[in-house]
Length: 344
Image 1 (cartoon, rainbow, N blue to C red):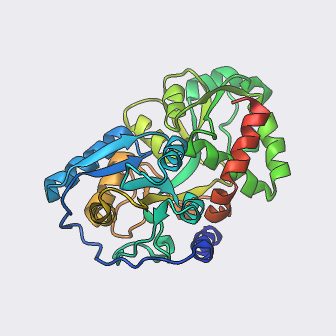
Image 2 (cartoon, rainbow, N blue to C red):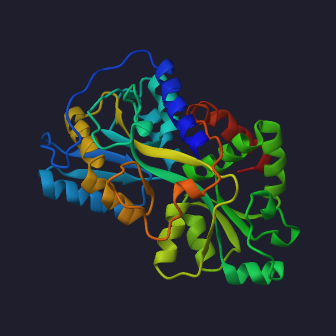
């Protein structure tokens, strides 16, 4: 865990070296933020219901409306690039690793609020990304289907233990060319193997067991929960959500697994720049942070916010040395290779 957190911090410093300057911002991290006039447009991969609830809470507190566009992370990045020079969004949700390439393309801008209460390990010194949650790569298992397909084999504890011939057609995962969840899974394999060759060897075998590649990161948790597949790749918060709704699903943290910082960035040249800044600050406050944990079931970046119910503490987990900057830099090339190999 300590190595992983040091890597997160090192990743943030590496990101700083990639940037070509920064624009200083101002303001504190208080929950109560006086908003700028005009609607704020928020592109986010966050599940629709939590995003809507956050937008409503912000409007109730500040009087500023937040227009939410919810799509997968990959779709939002493509939309942002397509809108370059005439952006419609003020704020975009992303993983910290995606910020480096976007900043170099001048699609997002720097902003440096005080970020009071945020763990300093999860603060970008250049101000391009603003952390809201930690998300863990996990596997959801439908216990009944698993028993039926494997003859009652123990649940997997490592990624390699999923490579079972009797699971052919019984695994589901998000398409990494479209989904940030899917891409994080692929990047996790690269980092745990230490090179792409070992990762592609694993992924070649994993592909043989896949019954479906979904367009969104949240879909596998639903498909496993309803028994359509025995197991699926998913972020922990998606699995905690469906389990909390009463579905019989087991949450597995394969050793070692990935943890990434998820947050938001300010869009360069956006229609409501000041409004976007106020909203980003509000999202990092204690009230919004606790709402994110309660609604999304992700891990907080603030020490004064409770962990989600049913979640293991980070210190208990075997985490891969996940490099967010490298993950962002290699995303396009890795996604193209994945599409070429597996026809997605």
